[in-house]
Length: 395
Image (cartoon, rainbow, N blue to C red; front, side):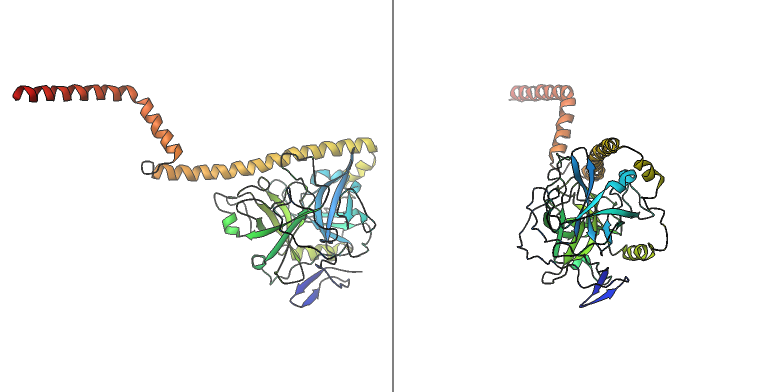
């Protein structure tokens, strides 16, 4: 049996009653590739990220990926609070797939677990994605192997901005235009940590990044998370180090892979104590967020299978639409902020600048005043001719 561990330099601090031998180690040899993005990126090698899990829901067409997660120990998985939020009545139907590389092709090293308990942060807000973090207690312990290993929580002394090697992984959609087509194979991409102040700039996310968020990706776009990657880990380490730490949980972002639309992650370090408290107290108390005992979940047991699958299909379809709408809204908010900023600049240097917009404005002014200008030009010509005649007569 294993448990959650927080590493502190070369030693580790035990934080649960279970014993831990290793975490954050890629036990299967991995060839390193430079990958542009999960969207259109290359496949991750089997076993290269053994702590990553695939959270799936049944539909009329079989199981589909809805989120990712990270193995913390043999009973607990870390994910995002918004995962399965609108499927709370059907949480008991979800399955957690461990050790898989292809979401629908389960090999001999793959294990499947059900959700015993789903604990969302008490102050999670679905609309704003505040406190977007959650824990899943599995229905039975994991049997660890080379393809299934726990991830490491980072020590409080470590700084994610000082990490040299950061990766994101997921089975999310490969193109934002096709929300119903998640990747069949786990994808990976290398990303950079973006300064929070820069990410919060008026022409970026305009003040919507909180102190418990991490921005990662690239300013110009490229490597990014997309729908279906939610809940998965942001993993970082020093370039020559062996251990990967799980610094973030995929939360939200702008348009996948676009300029100034990078992924936003929930900081694991910020919520580390919450994670440990919930796990240590889960055996003694019944949390309000425990979903399998909820009235809605009990009601779902009384529905027939076909009806359940139909409702799940409808919910997932609505979430696809909502996901696209919310991403577009975040872009509109940013554009509105940019527009206000640009208007202020335009008014302050309306004459001296030569932008296309200002040229069009000037051209519009000329067109609207064309008749009066024509009269002025005729009068000028008449005056000039009169002066020339007068000069000729004087000679």
